[in-house]
Image 1: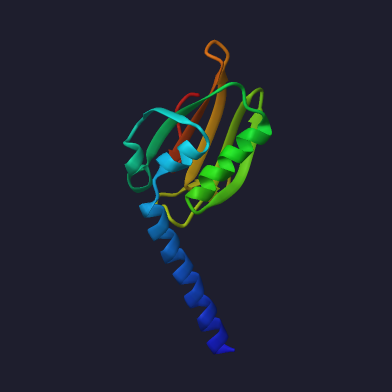
Image 2 (image 1 turned 45 degrees about the vertical axis):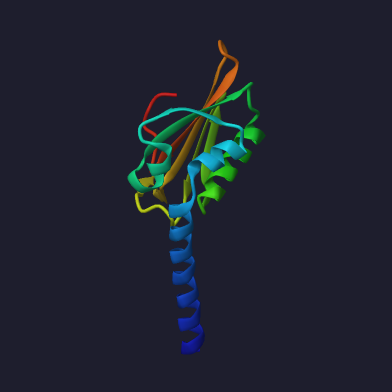
Length: 142
């Protein structure tokens, strides 16, 4: 019984270590490119966001449905080795929070530990959706 418990704990720690290495080596640029998001600005260089924290803004033509927003969120969070914990969608705005063991910065929101945040809105004048990806959280206007 002790042997099984020790083996399971070793597997858990190995998974956490592998996730940290993979997220550290991954590039958020690829996650944005996979979803056809053109990076327009950010508080840090896109290559440094996982290490330093901050936010990146991307744009995609047209209005996204809630399902498309969820897909983008799940793709980006999944690429970072994490998953979506919860989301809010109201009046065309979409906000999602996620967690990955590969990013050290964390915040507590509504009693949950998060370290990734996506906020999506739509600009009618330019007919494009604006996507903000924040680590550990995006605190700006969108």
